[in-house]
Length: 125
Image (tube, rainbow, N blue to C red; front, side):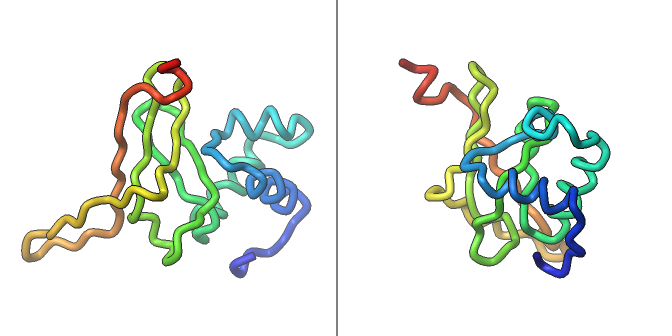
């Protein structure tokens, strides 16, 4: 797992995380793993993020979201996220790429987040 020492907690957290097809939060992971301490889950999620197995999404909701990295280059700057203001879910829109931003001379972009906010298809019904 990307040079991460496998511990029992890390293996359990990764197993559950890797089964997810949508974004999730620390609170979600706590519900799915009630026998595991919150701090242990958090440390595992951060470690997986640092090693590009997960990417973190700041959707403006005040709750950090995570998603399994399916990016080809593991830099996480290539696709758009959508935050539903009605249900609070965040979606990875992997087929929609972040527009290229030409940086001014002397600036270097290390990361980019592109969040579109609105109402999702389920809430529109």
